[in-house]
Length: 404
Image (cartoon, rainbow, N blue to C red):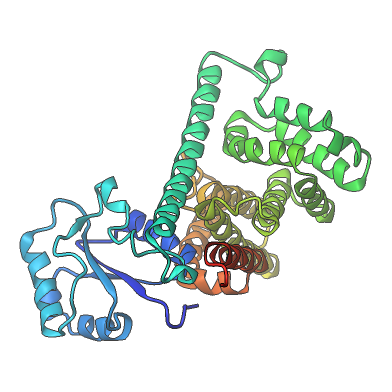
């Protein structure tokens, strides 16, 4: 997916991938409806015959092009080799300085004054300042959320290190129990209590309560978002109940929880709940896309296992457990932290399952990165988000520049 007629932001990564910076810039470009391109440059840039072709194809005239060195260890010679290639092709850089992708200060777009939604072209300085402030607030909100999640995990870890056991008393219960209790006492829940969807949610939460502590810790961050969201938003509650009711028997509670979270994320983006936090909306979109890729791989793998001559029920169970654990992992952060596979001595079935999931995970990341913008072009919640934003910007322009 591209934005015809829109400007292009491009970054050349020198010395290795600059994943964090690239992802940060890509999200900002998508929100502002700019085209974006990231090219990783090898060590021998001067003799790389493919690099000029890539640059000609993906760096059109007028592109805002930046160099990003992986870290401070990248040599001046490597950077100069890239500059020489650009000079030969008469491609100009937007900045003479190569950004250090290992420095968080480089994550802020150098051209922030220019990176505004396409509908704002020709706006005055106050418009630009407002966009800058909104982007800064969105980023601050995202950082605050991550900090809160980190604090919650620290509290949970401290409780468990002190010997806390969910079965010993109310004060040592998993912290998500309080969230679920508050949900059940809310007026929105009372209106649906006893329905098949509500019973399905209760069953899932009950099964999670009796899981071991490492698995509970794996899902607590998601539950701390999902349960309060269901309590405060009747639309989110309905979406989650519908998703829970549709789950077929034979799937464990982790798979059911992942589908409930997907329903919640889709509702939040589509309903306007994230209109003021576009980067969080993109995080949710990325989670939904990658969950679908991994879920498809899960279904395909189960078909293969069931059709194989050496199929055993034990192997099928191990594959299911490994994939369902991975489906939870991808929802926590879109796959940035990877998947935690079984450690220690493994049975043959566990080893096969771990290798299978690891291969599926890497394929999911590759296909997810390559197809993310195309996914956004066809994902209804995001297109609804875009339509609302365009309407809001048009209304703002009309109010600021009334007809004479």
